[in-house]
Length: 214
Image (cartoon, rainbow, N blue to C red; front, side):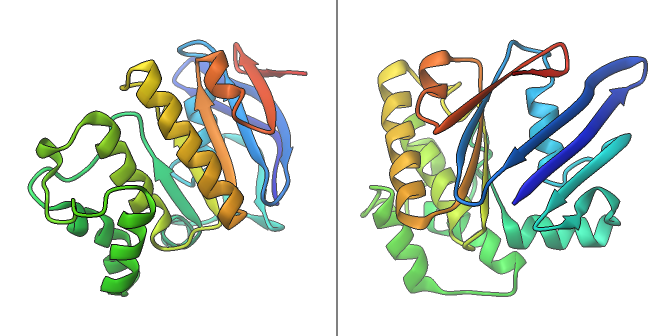
């Protein structure tokens, strides 16, 4: 489903990715580990269409997204990608319900029943009208997971999703991500620096100094 061919990326004189080649099957749960600055988040951003490689190709279902223009990348992100971030990235002045609604509005949809069902599915029934500041870190990340899934993307990209949580809450979030992946069959790519978090994936890669270690 996702194929990277000799992908390179630099920022100024800093070569962040150095010839990455990688294949991920549809429905696979993959983790990418590495220290800070190793290039793992850059790799995730390239797959998510938030940036373009300097060299090489990124193919998703045979389409070279690395050659897409800005408009095509926007459509790709809105339709096919669900993002989960370390710091949740919830809008603070709107409710849980409204935060989960946002991806649907961007796609010209508004389905209240699906939003209530998704909030219930991530274990937050009754919190629909709460604001992010009224929730714990784990609850905020559950909102972010609901938001990532609500528009039914094919690919979930999780960038250090437990990095702002204590270990027990982090484990609960990973159990939820694994459960939702098994139920939906979505492709999940997880970036983490924690070895025990990487073990939730079916297959693990390590990136060091911009290169994948086999």
